[in-house]
View: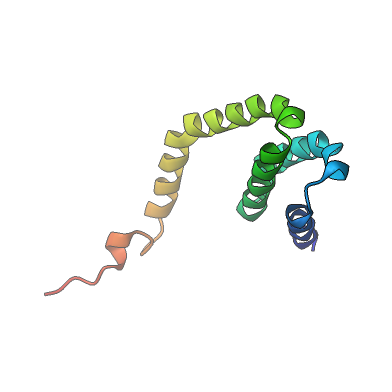
Length: 108
């Protein structure tokens, strides 16, 4: 229930018109979106990224200080990529039939 509510709120934020009333909250919203990006599931992270892009496109000067934390987050993700890939393949290789090679039917 909590996840569905959060998705609905993010979708509403994404659809709101970006006008002067929204501008005064842009900085706080960006901070919350960064937190969602770090902690929530993929669906919420994608919606958060879309909102962040819209906010940056419309309010560059207001949200400019949030750019560096975002770039640091992206850099951190790329630094952790080898470990994530290794863990993913180790987990999948222990499950039977989980690899593409295991699901291919061999011809006699």
